Image (cartoon, rainbow, N blue to C red; front, top):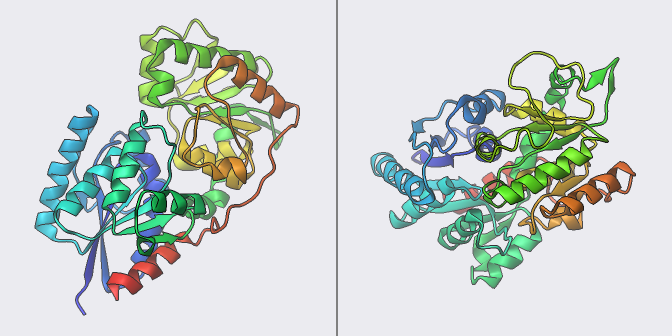
Length: 384
């Protein structure tokens, strides 16, 4: 039997965490050749290179280097580069993960070239089409031949949209494979000491923040309101804020650094005192961020993946959005949807500090074995 060639596509940080266990699983089998395609949607060291090192990802076999741009420009450039790669190397299967522009662009290209397509993390819906990710998810799922879901809600969404049940496979959450594989290693990180959060082996109370969605950072009044709420909460608990480059750009553009008491720390020295501060730091590598997240009193985020990771870690999570494509993290996990209104954020943060926290339950198949289940299905369907 000839060796089957599989393209695994990544483009952004969340993609790297989802692709790592797939590559590890598929590369165990000599009759499969996996080709890692990196579109370059995230392209600097903090947003890309460090993750490849920490997740033990191989160097990309194909690097498209598309960089930033508008939705249309970025998607179009990815399609052009990916089409050339597919025509040259003729893969037997393309695997895309998540919901970013790289996901949709490569899914469209594979479908038009009649290459079988698998979508990992299919069926998630926020039902908010103002989110670019929602458009990417819907269209990718309509194109895919194999749809791998993280929860039963996703299956229900796909069937409602007319997708055949025979294409849908409930396998669990591949990003949790990565978290469970790296959690012990992450505890060796010295990020808590660097940030002044640990003394004499005792971890201080702190909150962790991620913020990047356009609905929160592209409008000055929304961003100003969130930062006001953070400033109020920081009077009671320090907040660590690894800043997405785009978010930091918006904070500076709107001249909000001085209006709220954010301490900007972009150096590498150790910090002695973080009390009553929102501490703005550079983007973190995966292991440092996982360590911070696992020890946090609570996490504030507008990221989908962080909602899932905090559920597994049992850390209370406040989602700064009006909706979520991951309702299982609210129903079964530790997630609470609070929106971006300052009063609601402050009230929810104080409730957690008063020990009123959601109950933790691990969703089915979030057990670290998802990549193996995906391989078994694909092996049976097209790779045998």
